[in-house]
Length: 392
Ligand SMILES: *Cc1c(COP(=O)(O)O)cnc(C)c1O
Image (tube, rainbow, N blue to C red; front, side, top):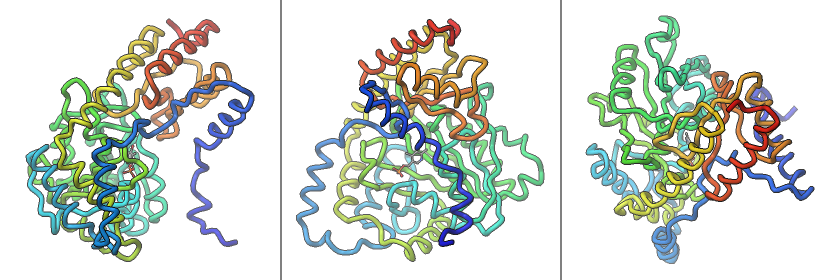
């Protein structure tokens, strides 16, 4: 009676059943390894914590923040974009602080679309895009991504009515869940497509700094004309291990940023100033801590990749993100495979279908466990293999 149709219509949270089962198995004394985690397990670097402690003491930071974030934070984002990507940004009009990008993404959709409008979302993709479009009264159209096409959307395969109806498009590289990465030309193609069809573009760059082997993820704002219709979300969560701090930013097109600013100023009053100042300090750092953390994830990724390959899985070697995305053996659905891994060898993975229908046939493994645990995962999967499941 007290619940809106929009809330009732939301799909049940897919991970909760696995989490409940995990607790049950752990109570039975079973050592469950959870590779379902979507966040880094490492602590926030000390220099950021120290800065927070200092800023917390200053009464100037105890007041409300400006709605669009402190000048200091926005200037630090501008510094980071200039230094890292060579992109100039105006801190007054082209940068807005968000209380984590999840919030920013969901509220941006409300600020941009009208009920009934269509939003193009990657499939498989971060589940928030679809649910947030639903909550804003919009309709999602999937941009199917597949391994054959390196998880790059085939824009030209969209029908004319689909192109015409679409108001907004989401992209996400390095990708959650597929770990796919791209070069700038893919973003050039996306902007060309969006300009000719008058579609606003949102690039979710949550893993922009979590990259391996010298690969540098491009920013969509490096594409000429991108600022005419695109924004990019960035977050301190994954690159600086600050998921709980809730701080990120959106940069790019003035009109989209202003719309989000107006919407948010009626809902929240930005993040705690001390957190914004600690985050600004992180963005102005030499990023050596980020590189160190990426090295740790790379070591884990290599170990997991090699183990999976030896077991006979079809899998691409990631150049970024904190995930790996193997194809599962034939004869299983993703959900069945995930279920059996948990029940038979105590490993939690996320079925690919949690990220959209094109995730069928895949599972997502998080690299947020130590190398020894990854070795244990591979050992257990071998055991699983002996039961004739995984072809080798
Ligand atoms: C983790 C994640 C986010 C959310 O990050 P926060 O800034 O912590 O809200 C957004 N997009 C993707 C793809 C993610 O994986």
